[in-house]
Amino acid sequence: MNIKIIGVGKIKEKYLKEGIKEYLKRLQPMAKIEIIEVADEKEPANSSPAEEKIVKEKEEERIKKHLKPGSFLIALAIEGKELSSEGFAQKLKNLALEGKSDITFVIGGSLGLSKGILDKADFLLSFSKMTFPHQLMRLILLEQIYRAFKIIRGETYHK
Image 1 (tube, rainbow, N blue to C red):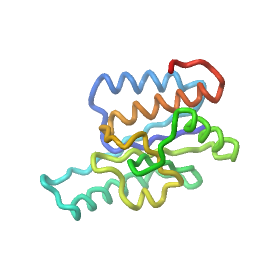
Image 2: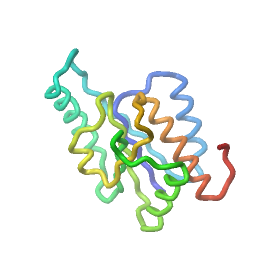
Image 3: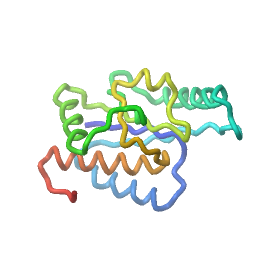
């Protein structure tokens, strides 16, 4: 399976970089993972909804440059569908069985994703109704992808 993760913004914190590196290493035998960071757009202080829309649209243009036709697009969005770890594993397994072995996940910046990206997505995935820092979501997503592959393979992994 080929998995691409497009994330808005740069990871600066050492502990997040180390966690991401660890899960990429663990996932190596299971899937080809590519992480692409696109620059986040600077948000004006006390921005209006119109200014926030412009910021998200500029980030959308950067994201679109890395989208591959035919890849199954999963956008992380608070309004998306919440899945259990087992449900997420089943989703990935079903995609593979349907011949969709090329999957792209998109994680927005601090304002989330543009309407254009959300509308383009094949599936909206929510990890929680809570808000998480977008940098931390990369690590959480990688951990859940790793967990999903362990579940699919019937291998043990801590609960």
